[in-house]
Image 1 (cartoon, rainbow, N blue to C red):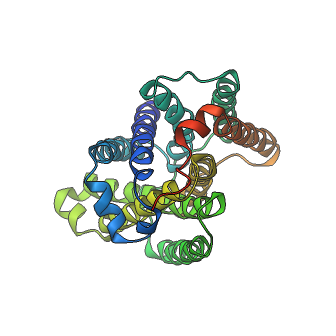
Image 2 (image 1 turned 90 degrees about the horizontal axis):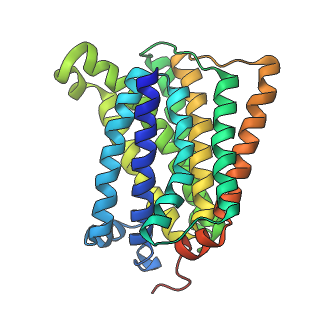
Amino acid sequence: MAVAVVCALLAAVSNALATVLQRRAASTVPLSKGFSGSLITSLARRPVWLGGMAAVMAAACFQALALYNGALSVVQPIFVLELPTALLIAGLIFHRSLPRQGWAGVACIVVGVGTALGAASPTAGSSQTGMVRWIPVLVLCGAVTVLLIGAALRRPAGKARAAAFALGAAIGYALTAALMKSAAYTWDTRGPVGFFTAWQTYGFALAGVTALFLLENALQSGPIAASQPVLTMGDAVLSISLGVVLYGERIRTGWWLVPELAGAAVTLAGALLLTTTPMAKSLLAPLPDRT
């Protein structure tokens, strides 16, 4: 389990770097290119975005190792640490220091995640699951994502649009992790041939690309303060749910729900503190008019 935690932390750092670089690139693209293939084409011409994609690939490798060695409900919640890490990296890149409010937010997130995971004490379930569980999960995730996309497209650029796209991305990333765990087990038991002939391999690739596309639109549509908390918290909660439903992982219930919810509340408070700092607003807010 220690290997899984270390790999998950490395994946969170890589994702944080990717978020900062991708956000920097997305802010230079006209809003009119949003939710179209030309958005990715325009971004691909920017070296900073390509650097972000390299960080995304590194994060995927670390994430696969983490999921192979640990439970989905342990690995994915650690990704909540991506939010404070992203702002710390942004501060280093743009030579800005995090204010006292920001450090309070970092402390809240670290304490909150630690408290929630310690209280939940997730235990590993099975390494593989059948189609009887996959089918309803895929149908529900797909339907909710479509509804969120529709809601986002009906909104003008701003917080609501960014949050809707971010929640859709969170669903995509949680589903990607669940499928990746299954594909990693297939590689271990059936080798490369089994891996490349398993539907889960192409499923997590499709879910990952979809999530990335929705994230790019979220970053382009509004401030990171609207998208990043929704993305990180949504991914954590949904991943725990998928771990329980798909793989039979268990978390403690009963009175343990009190510290679990308290930890989640402290984490959310930390996220809000971080994303409302002047540093976050000045460095990561979208340009008001991009035509």
